[in-house]
Amino acid sequence: MSSEHYRRRPQINSLPSNFQYAESSGAPMQSAHQMLSFDSLPRAQNDQHFMITPSTVPNIPSNNYNLTTSMAMPQAFTVWSDPNHTPMDFDSQNTNDCYDYSPSIVGNEQDSPFLRGMSYSEVPRTCFPCDPRMLNEGGNMAVDPFDASAYLRDPNKSDMQTSTEPTPTSLGFDALENSHNFSRLSISNSPKPEHETPSSDYFPFNKPTHFPLPSSEPSEDGGISSREMTAVDGDDPSADEPYAKLIHRALMSAPDHSMVLQEIYEWFRKHTAKGASDTKGWMNSIRHNLSMNAAFKKTERKTSGDETKKSTEWVLEEFAIKDGVQSTTRYRKGTGAKKFMKTENPAPSRQSSGRKGGISASKTKMQRQQQRSMSGTHRSRHGHGYEFLRSHFPTQRHSSPPTPPTHENIPGAGCNPYFFPKQQLEMPYEDMCGLQDVQGVYIDDHGPIFANNHDYASADGLPRY
DNA sequence: GACTTTAAACATA
DNA sequence: TATGTTTAAAGTC
Image (cartoon, rainbow, N blue to C red):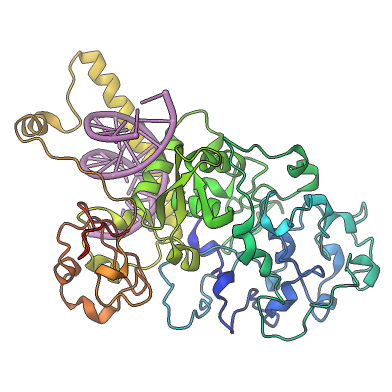
């Protein structure tokens, strides 16, 4: 899975006026209001993808669709954007380096706040032609999509707007903005009521669904090419998706964009192939990514009913909510800031390559361990020299503070605490900010600034988070 | 060299 | 023991 396979996700709570969801090579842009269902709720993932305006419908033979190929949209309606397509403009923000996600991912959860307390099956599901319930056995439309009766529109609702200027109201984003009011459903503390977890029968796309990659081609036998991924056959797209992106998705799906670690684990178990593994390596990787990626902020949440109990919660940073998540590697210690100025979005192949490398590293490590055990010797992974240094000059291991510094202690950061204008980078960033010991400083047009190893003591003596 | 994954050591609650 | 932090190694591009 590569970042290129994701569309740049316009953030709902900061939609630019020129925001557009759908891009297509052959059809005119779909304005935002066209992505609406008639209940004014944002549609869940797959519905959104197939919200097609009547004006475009006649171009598509309805029998192109059936249950099994419903995701194989004609090229003109490719859901995932053309990687060569110019990304949408977020005002002056450069988001080129960000992973981005389909807007539909947010709220694509069974317990999504978008459901407004309704069970999933109760939510009017639009629309033509992807809704299986609107298809007959032959995969053809059983309901005339142009027939008003095909839609479950509330006649009392009058907030459907025809303006092409998306507004929070017209998009039904009030539900989103009020999502903070939703009580959290903690896995550990507040198990979801049974009725809130509809069966997969009601949620045919609750797993990453088969979709064509931009580069995918039909295989010779007419089947799915090797580049196309399915969740059904175990070739889950999430398997090739970086942890950082998956975690981002998980958090984006949660109210307040926050989860405790166990909830993230649970999300991975539900939605990714990684989480299906019996090994615990993927948990380690999640923790590694949470710690290393500045997009994820650690906070404390008090357990309801017991003020003394606190649980650690991971929440998305604002910039990550808005722009997506950067690769975790960029925040590593000692990588320096300058390199970030030149790096672009990681190539799609890198992600699978990285995975292969990781797997290979694991294998070779195992082999080495076996050889060691065979020979009866043991060497530290650092070798004798390291052990000597370690025993004679033990390094202090200090914990990183939970969150990156804010703009308050970084001049020039402006309203975005993780934004640094490029022109300020004539000198090394660490020197510029006096953060020589900053860990994993990330500099980019809009990038985050990561954790200082020591503290964020400010003029008032209080740590800054 | 950048990127990602994976494993592991270590610290802390 | 669970969680969090950090480092290192590996393969691919």
